[in-house]
Length: 554
Image (cartoon, rainbow, N blue to C red; front, side, top):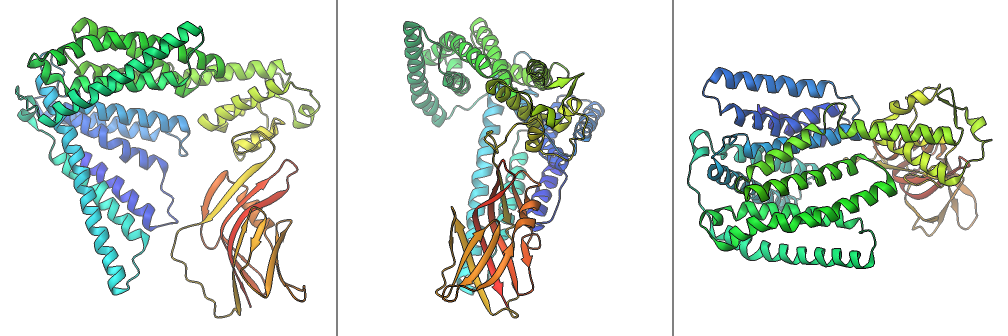
């Protein structure tokens, strides 16, 4: 099944590269992308059972669970759906390391298996990179020596063959199997000793000293820690756990440095975890609860637990670092207690409170726009409300706020919904402008110029238009492109872009279009738009900022 998922994902990549008009369902990407680590984890778990029927049954149950998960995803994935799938995928990938070693006394096989898997994964992609380099140079040679036009798609297809097919197959082939996974002997390479003992340990020491000096500084100055401290402590913790894994054989050899590091690193980390908690609390106070902050807070709680466990157990069984992390990640991502549901409820409660405080709703419904315009609202409160609505719509979809409105929101984007709340919007900030970027798809375009006498390359940047022509000039007025004779001043061609801009404004920020969609034709001209950046201001006027096109005149 893992091979099937690898093949399926590779086919999706190939379709996406070679068929620019393809519309691949987003759920298929999740099915095959998540399916690779999930089916591999289930297969390794099934190997633990001597009864083949039990192992096969377990894999069938796993496949059904995967299909059901994908089936119940919405057709258009929201950010929270992507988050959930990424967390599941990461959890499955980490589970690969320990699902074969859930017995109590298997620390050595667990270490040796983990080392082998990581080395084989790195090796697979190094080999794939060498293959990609070789094939690319071959294609480039054909291009340069035989004057054969090798398109970008050739290199993209080669990358799929090398990295999405060859690398996974090589990796899967070299995963230790059956009894090879449970060997009670290990091979500690000199490379790992140098990496862990003489490179990572000094870096961790410097890192820890800097954080402790910073902690002493904020205690003396009696101020809250900078938000960056959360990420710095997280990096220190993860790097420390990786170093403990690398140096585990030194403990078995009774190496003093390895023993001291394993025993004392959790104690050194624990005060910094407390500092991290204070930093997270400050972020909560300033900005409120979000999915990202909820995950960071859970990670912080997990660090408390794992530090205590490592202190008590003297870091004897490192596999429980993986097991506990995966358990917390999965439990916190499913069910009504998940970070997504808790964040949603908290955000909705705060939103409803703000709506009531500024008298924006009646009987649970937001007032019509004309009535909202007559309400004098404190700017700080309105900014908070707009941020809440923007977050809910962006992460959970417009359906999450539909209950506040009588009118249908399904055909509106988040900017239009915010405008319905009398909030001025601007692509990420709220100042009254909305931006649109349209680009011609990267495809091989052959233009028929036989019926045209003149062709211009037009470039407009920051209001200045360049035609690079000694006879003709161009200007843009009110979304209309005009080509005129410099000497006589007579207008030769006049192209209105209003309809195209209105079409582009139906989509948020960025979208690629086919040649047909980017072409404007008239009686004596044809305009092919390569790229256009425009904005619609609070007065609903469209202003073109940047514009590149080819204009052909009969």
